[in-house]
Length: 335
Image (cartoon, rainbow, N blue to C red; front, side, top):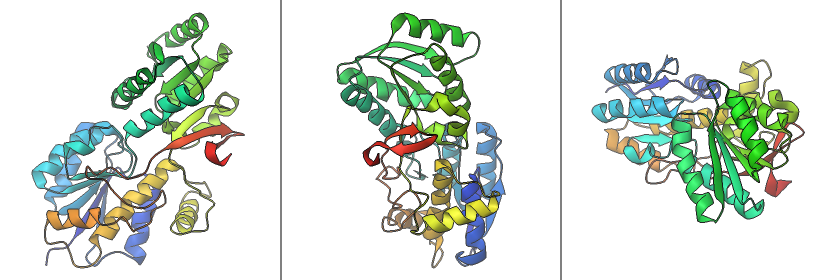
């Protein structure tokens, strides 16, 4: 009987903790985890993915970015094997292949929640967008913009963060245009840079950014600049005594010198658990059986919620609006 090999590519910290723990305590018979580093490079991610599938891997967990996942999907199609991404959120990825799954919600949902909140709840009539060029913005901004305009508000500017003199351009635009709200679509470092510029001109309106600010210690590093900023994201209660949350937090802290996990670490953990659950029991006869197993995990509990996927392979979780208060992300409905 062929050995089932789970190969792990570009897995986040908690995902590695989950996979290592599974190997030691609850791994399926014949389970083997192999680790690769794509260096956040799409071409290298595709190469590693192809080699892992060639070596017999049934599942590859990755890529960490949408660009990596986009490069890996053709390799999965060639091999007829499965990819589970913990953090590739570009909207069109899931629909492009029935072999692709993700434990992070699509940017489509985040963009819709942000737009609805700004226009309907904060009554913003004019919104300025600050963005980092790339697939993240390419996927989210058309959805965000479309919803804003559908609700009767107006996008009054769309300004890039970087590469040169962008801060002056944004400062001048905010001072002259005085939009009701600012929406920042970028990754962590660029969010921090944009917040510094927005606060520097003493902008008085509503500021909303994306869930990438919940990565690592960006909220702490932003300090006062992040206070009162709104963020659409999935809610998780890391203080919960329920499983698997309690064990996840305990193992993560033990492996990371007492540091608490972030939202994207939880996505990584859940991606690993999807793979482990799908490989439990007799090895799947073929990829079709493996797909059925993954699509049947809706009653299994992950850190971010049930491990249920829609017909496209999107995790069935939806972001809600949060606000940064006293350096913490607080769900509005719970505040």
